[in-house]
Length: 190
Image (cartoon, rainbow, N blue to C red; front, side, top):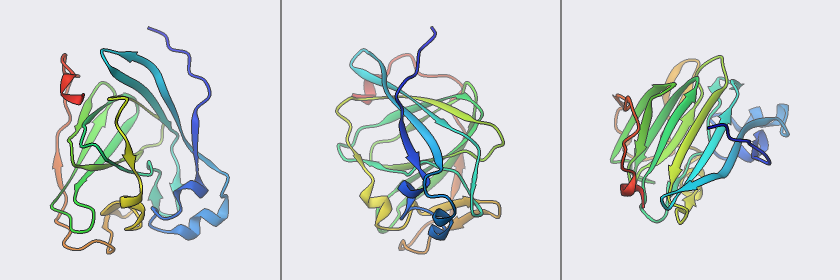
């Protein structure tokens, strides 16, 4: 099914102030477009389908990423990589982190964002990353918890994973495998 994408929400470099490893990198080009969010591309079975497009880019030494958020209503979400390669970072806890893990996923693979976990998507590659996601239309995003700590509990850079010292008790990052296909029944997202 061909979907026509129009009128994206655009996240610019200046919009990332407060979540980057190096906020000084913003000054180089604050209006630079980092990624594009196409919300409500379609609806099905009480869920909203979105598409996010993240061109490759370095912000200082850090790979381009989404701003990151928690879900206020404790709902889950599922992401499907359409094109490119993604690193998904998941963390449980906003000040003291109970759990943190990453998943590397390629085209055709998917990840489930568990209820209660904040998440950030990173494009570590040299090609544009295209993602789709299914989420409840009632799901409300909390960006403030991530911004209050100057980003997620880890940054991903040309030097690898770097712990964000603005959190207490950040565990070592663990790595999980992506799903090889999208579950047939997505009612658990409602």
